[in-house]
Every structure is written in structure tokens, then in C-alpha cells.
Amino acid sequence: MELQQYMQRVGRQAREASRVIARADSQVKNEALRAIATAIRRESAALLAANREDLVAARAAGLEPVMLERLTLSEKSVAAMAEGVEQVASLPDPVGEISELKFRPSGIQVGKMRVPLGVIGIIYEARPNVTADAAALCLKSGNAAILRGGSEAIRSNRLIAALVQEGLAAAGLPANVVQVIDTTDRAAVGHLITMRDYVDVIVPRGGKGLISRLLAESRVPMIQHLDGNCHVYIDDDADADKALSIVENSKTQRYGTCNTAESLLVARSVAVRLLPPIAAMLMGKGVEIRGCAETQALVSAAKAATEEDYASEFLAPIISVKVVTGLGEAIEHINRYGSHHTETIVSENYANAMRFLREVDSASVMVNASTRFADGFEYGLGAEIGISTDKIHARGPVGLEGLTSQKWIVLGNGQVRS
Image (cartoon, rainbow, N blue to C red; front, side, top):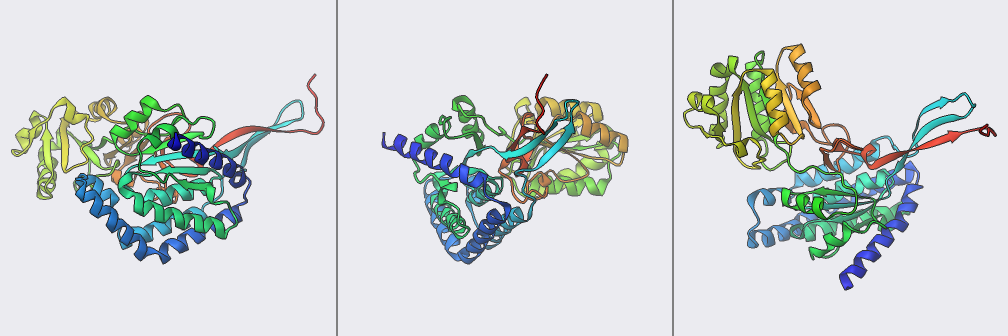
């Protein structure tokens, strides 16, 4: 009962704060964001110290290496956190933007106005930088935020939340615009995802287990993606140097991110020439290759791939590989086994590249670029609240515009309907 009462209080406070932040002008919101960035930079050493405490506890609890990587802060990542908040401040404010105004025969003007969603609940694991990113994006888009980070990052998240609330106070905004759930009790999530009176949308950022649970239990609409089985397709007309560097970056820059490539498809006409050096590069970096029979014939160290491998998000130094007849089979394979997250084609053939863009059913589709670019910061959004593989409302990296909706507006001069 105490937890339920606590969550209800957080929800009420968020709803009240949402009405204040919804009417705040851009100058005030930007002032708060710049103050938050300043506070993060000032307290960099304290943030790193809190994060070290989280890491000690996480290692003692046996947290998996991929989660430890996500949990870890560095001087560079703290600086990037502050930079991301500042970049959000520099972006145009979408709230109040009027578009598509048209005169109707009656003389009225009909258009749309962009407005905040209201109260956004963000549930995430391990990554403390999400606390700053989510706070900044919700604040700038005129929304109140309820943040529920993973228990493994509780010390880091508490300090970041305090710095966010310091920035809000500096701009004269209520601290409850951004609230961090100050309990590690997992039952808090169950309350948050069913509080329809107070929460307008849930954004989960975490592993497949978390998101599967929320899909089954949430009574609040969600912006989410389940996993990131991203593909690189090397076309018949691929440039060899581009293919090698794009596969290397897409797969090996980081293993634990949702935009890391997990599957490699190679056109049969270039497989003999391009696959062996690419495989050698991957294995030289410790990546295990699981491939089809043709892959195994070209790469002796490759293990046999299963159907499950082609559908898997490994989040590890493992990649599935398949030799395909060409573009059509590659598109069919991606749409069958992929998670609709991010895919890229390596090709110098314009027609093939355009067909790939049109027919691949994913949130981000690329030509001659690493899948690792599928990120709000890289897309110029400042930061992202998450990545959506849904087709309704928001798709791909969700930034400011994805945290708003549109309502119809009518401008008249005394007109009445006859």
C-alpha cells in the first residue's frame, strides 16, 4: 500500500507539473537546459564517483558484461551527456508550431498545432545517461517525465536527477517536471504502466525481457522496440573498401547497442572476392561467424547458422552470415528475420539502393553507411528518448517531435455552419 500511495503521489505531481511545463516558453525551457548542462559538467567528478559505486555493486551482483558496459560512465560520456542537453536547447521548439493552414469554402482556416503529449513514463535499464537525455527531451517538448531507471544505476540516477532539478529551479520551473522513482522495488514498474489517469505514454528502454513484460502488462500506450537485429547487405555492385569498413564499424564498434549489426548478407556474385577478407577482419577482432553452407565453404572457421541465429539480436561478438542470390533475396530475408530496426546496403548501383530504401520494412534504412548511425544524436535530434519500430505515431529515433502530438485548430471570423 505504501508503494502504491507513493506512485500515485508521483503521478499526481507529474500531472500538475505537466500543465506548467506545457505553457512554458522556449526561453525558460532553454534556460533550464543550459543550467542542467552546466551542473552536469560541474559535478563530473561526483557523477563518476557515484557511478563507480554502482559498478562495484553491479559486479558483486553478477551483472552481465553487456549491462556493465551500458552502466559505465567516463569523463567522455559525462561530457557528451552535457553536450546532448545543450544540443536539445539549441533545437527549434516544436510546441505551438502551426502547420497546414488552409482556407475552406466557409471562410474558416483549418490547420494543426503541435502540442505536448503530457506525462511520459520512461523505464530503462543500466544506462544512467538516459536520465539526462530523457529529462532534456521531455522538458524541451513541454512534457513532464517520470523516470524509472534500473536498480543497478540508482546512485548515478539520483545524482543526475538532482542536477536536473537544480536546473529546473534555476529557470523557475517546478522540480516535479522531472521525477526519478526513488525505489528499487520492481513493483513500482507495475504501478507506473497502469496509471492511465496520470501517465499518457510509456517509453521502455531495456532488454527484451523488460519490453516483453511491458507489452503484456501495460495499460498505457507505449513507444517501443523489442530488439535490434540489424543487417548489412553487400550488393553485387558494392565497393570492396566501403564494404569492409562499414561491416567493421557496424559490428565491432560496440557490441551491446541496438543499432549494432547482427546479420551480414552477401550477394553471391561478390562473395568469393569480398567475404573472406571481411570474415578475416571480423575473426581478427574476436567475432564468431555463424553462416550458411556457402559461407562455411568460403570461411572454414564459420559455424553452421540456425534459423534462430538469423533472427537473433546477439549483443555479443557473434554475427550471422548468409550468401544470397541478390537484392531480392536480401530484402526478403531482412523482412522475414529482421526486427524492423536498422538495415544498410553497400552498393554503387543507384537503382538497387533506391529499391532497398523503398522495400525494406525498417525504421531506419541506409545506403553506404554504418548501422551505428541510427541514433538520435547522429540524426541531429540532440538526444533520443528511444527508438521505435512501431509504424504509428513515431518511428525510428524519437526526439522532440516524437514527444508531441498534433491537434486540429480552426481560425474563424464569426462564421457559422449553414
